[in-house]
Length: 187
Ligand code: GDP
Ligand code: MG
Image (cartoon, rainbow, N blue to C red; front, side, top):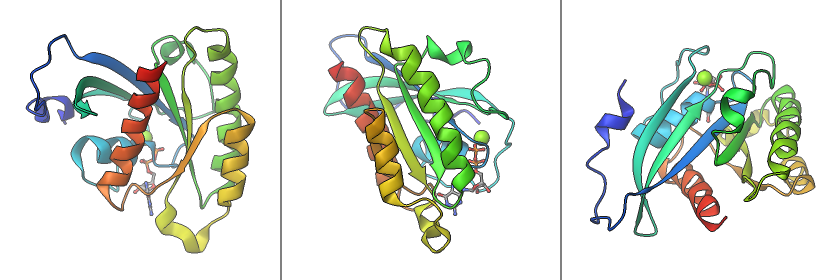
């Protein structure tokens, strides 16, 4: 799938400069919906079956507040929590750490990721935004992680917090990625 190619005609304003780049790394337990969110953002479609071991980086030309950006998204596929983090730590301009609201274990896994990336990015100037994201709000009936728990974890580490569903509306998913770009631009 060539997500990057499919969207290269997306710039509506002629940039005066080369567009800024924003590298976003998606982290979280297997099954939390990292690939579904990434694909939704890039294609507006929900793809329910995605190779769980596939890790790849995609590129999309986005316009955020009339400014063009090349947004690169690394959809990671860790099996055992934060290991071999070197591959993304220095590359990232921002991290989105995903859990599934219907799976308590995936929320616990987030804590490890938040600790790892905030420990790394603390020493950096500018520091790297970290966003905590509870996915699968369409599974409300099976919720195991309250919104308050998500918000509390995020505030403990000074992160923004959102809840979303990869299989509901595209604009809510796009909004989160664009907020990440705004935070990076602000740094
Ligand atoms: P990853 O391992 O974090 O990349 O997770 P995937 O994107 O492969 O998703 C794991 C499973 O959860 C798949 O069966 C998806 O169809 C499903 N899934 C992903 N996002 C959502 C969501 O927002 N709602 C629901 N109901 N299922 C989702
Ligand atoms: Mg995946």
